[in-house]
Image (cartoon, rainbow, N blue to C red; front, side, top):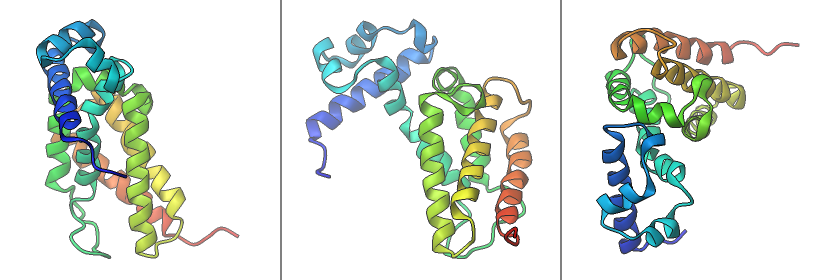
Amino acid sequence: MSPEDPRTARTKARLRESLLAECAGRPLGEVSVSAVVRRAGVGRATFYLHYEDLPALAVDACADVVHAAVDALHAWQTEPGARAPARPPAALAAFLADASAHAALYRTLLLPGGGGPLGERLHRELRARARAERAAAGAPHADLVATAVAATFTGILADWLHDGIPGSPAELAGRLWPLLLALHRAGAGPTAA
């Protein structure tokens, strides 16, 4: 894959920043392409050269949240084969606090239960990372456990952002972490005959 042209990267960055600024005061459904391009200082044709529509730009703008989520769940892995701590990594609560601050935008893209374009991307990237790390460690059932972890995290995050699960970021991290650890341990058990 060739590196992105610097001008294209700058234009896309301006469009992402513009969208996030527009969504700070109102939901994505009330934001127009006109408002985004005006704030970004680019033409409407330039917008459509890079993005099909506002949801496509929104998913791109939220890509950092996907990487932050994946990194937060794996922050404790400082070396291969490291044992997961009993308490959630501080990065998990920090990620949840940041997600809470952008909840209005994320709720548009991450539907209850974990669906939607942001949910699909989060699930896919989290599953890939968990599977790769599990396979590298020689742990059994890499596909099964990776899917379970990705689905659990994505679904719980979505339902929490949609106010279906109560709690502060720290409280949710404290309740979510043992569930994820239990999934990892369950996958390490004996194979059924």
